[in-house]
Image (tube, one colour):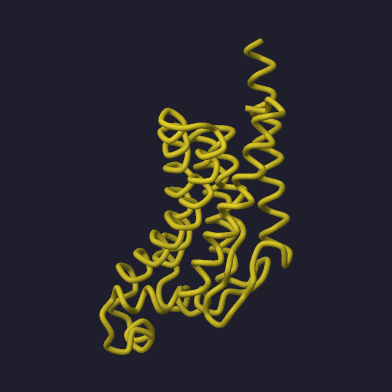
Length: 199
């Protein structure tokens, strides 16, 4: 029984990793608008956290972070901001792209478990989907400001504004669209997987 369960988890992990890679390296995963991109890659991370727990969420989140960093050097697409940040400091660019996505996936696993104790699976999936996009944005922008806030590039983008106002105006409609899409799709897919007894 335990071997079957472990096999099921490995198959699910491989499937979600494959889906994320497909999305990351095709137009399915990103909608580029200016220096930022609306990303749908937070959805496989949320599904991994729901079906496989914090460790599965962290693993798929780490894959997301790695593909995001690789865009800084033109692998699988190009991030205009990523190219600039990589030119300033490659190591900090890696940290800024990788760590927020890994943390997102890890925390989502705990969020799903916590909400599930107080509610039902469908609500838990919806909340996890929302948090996936929300936390991704918060962690990504926080790392951006903390690691690169003093650079000339970021100072020009901020333009003397309050940092909180800058973050809200910079991510704007992108973040809202990500949150809506992630909430709806994660809620539907997560509930369907639960009904199919896949977790």
